[in-house]
Image 1 (tube, rainbow over the protein chains, first blue to last red):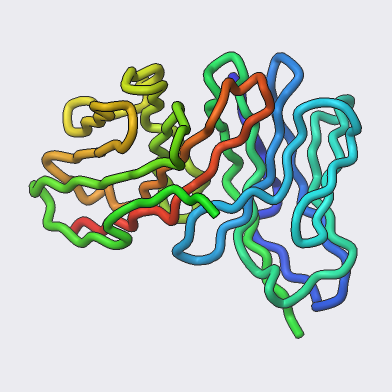
Image 2 (image 1 turned 120 degrees about the vertical axis):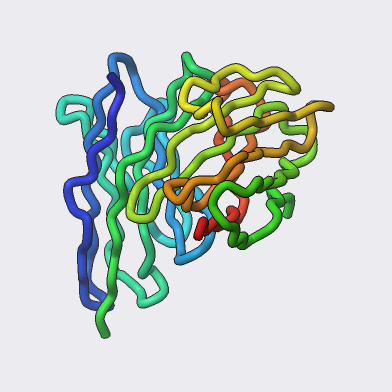
Length: 114
Length: 116
């Protein structure tokens, strides 16, 4: 069965420090992969997506992610975190053979300390 | 910028009562999704529409939940009767094309339901 694992439930980083959020997936075919961000009480905003091609993808707000097929991973990175990046981050697999249904990880909550 | 509209933003209801949520997708988007997000978890798909047809409702608790998209535009999700375990964020999303054409889903702000 398809699944997404985000091993870190909560991460705290200092403002200006680099960030890496981990995501591992289980899917029997080439996945479509997404990272979404959610502020408290809000909906989900797409940060970036991978469908094919270059395995390093750039997104909004200075985020990037790298698809590594051999490790079944799609980790999210940012070189310098801002206080406004504090939020919940969700990795998701899109099932293209099921009409685009998304399977989400349980999320990683990011706290930023001054 | 086009957005997915949801109402209400917040709803408090007593258990055993009926409750309904409304979603208006981005204009022209044929695919509409309803997801449920329990606090501390990622969203899970409840139902997916392609135009007015249901294409996936395998995770919808059909004894109490119903969803419709009569004209293939806006959609309503209903719970009757509500139970304490239904307290969650209900998210609507829409996408504009065939998934294999590299489209993504756009989410609304959600409806936060509290059942007391």
